[in-house]
Image (cartoon, rainbow, N blue to C red; front, side, top):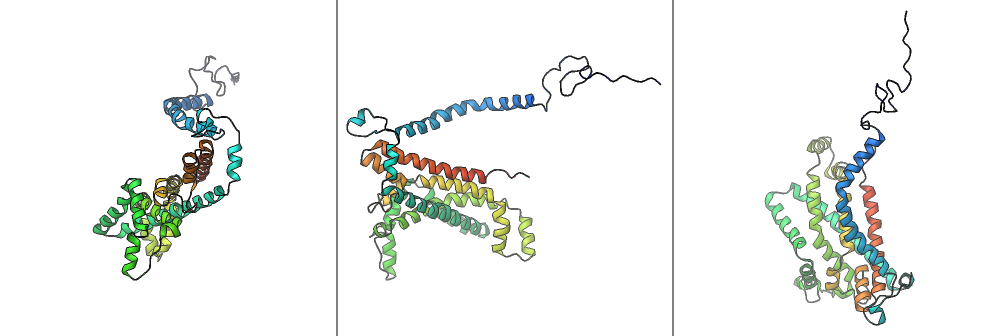
Length: 325
């Protein structure tokens, strides 16, 4: 019985070496090889190069320029207005030794969590759920009133909020009808006033996001839970919230970053006062840079605010990462 001698490795076929039956290299990389994957990656990256260049030019460039400005003694007046000097971390040392900075950090975080994380998201989700079960007339009326505050220009909304919370404004007038003595809300409770104003202005965005998200909840799952005796609260906790968790994370990130940069609303309503009792980081940065003419010092505050926003973004982006099975 004749035996067939084994073919030497590399003469006929070589899966790892990429040679054909004639011993010559195959034409092109194999589809599953590392080289093929690298080629596909490069092919997908090339169309993104123009947008990456624009991002580097219009986003990364100003960030780098701002950071460098925070390391100088740039000013609006005096010799430093014409030619600033590099002073290293002096602005940051001065900033962390200032009694106004830690207070501004606390006020910013209070404003952020109370108006964006809690106020806008909770109220927006509640309105979305209520409007889902309401009739057409109620949905139209509520949607119109809520969205109206959001579509107003920020300066107009700020003046409207000022007129509402002012000592002789709408709120105290309504309270007087019921025999309740009003207060100078913008002076006595400035943070409460600006928090409520920001909730009023920004809730519509959260409501629209959650209204779209709850439509994606499979009705058969909700109906099965209802048949099994699960009440509305249990269906919300164990079905609705888990299904829309990615929408919640996305909306939290967007509302947090937007609220962190709120300036016009607070500036018009309180100007950061009385004193520094409503001076969040954007207000403090503006005051130091343009009221006291210390551009470098004000830029250092803006850089800290940028870092805070980056920290929140990283946390939310990690929450949005796809789950790995």
